[in-house]
Image: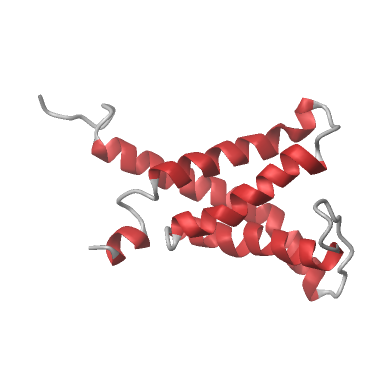
Amino acid sequence: MKSTFLSSGALANDLGLLLLRIISGAVMITHGNPKLQKILQGDLQFGDPIGIGQVPSLYLATFAEFLCAILVIIGLYTRLSLIPLIINMATAFFIVHSADDFGIKELSLLFLGMFLVLFLTGPGRYSVDNKLNK
């Protein structure tokens, strides 16, 4: 039986992973860029949700939300890049927003879910990782 574009074949799966990488990474950059701008402006005030200090927390969140998000978009070192993003989103959901209404913390849960799916599946065919592993 011939696979069509809308069927659940390898092409559809790889396109789905590409879209998931691009969308989740691009939206995550919109959260990381303001943090990067804070650093560049010398404003290092930030929360300290896990007790390592404001400055390390800001740098780690920026690293995850900006640099790792770019790597996820292009599919380079994808699974490795997802680890900081998963930790960041788990921290946001379970610690930073733990007392908030679900409507406030749901975005971090959605990101966490997307990043876990990508971690489990890998980046798919349309990624730099795939080209490097050939």
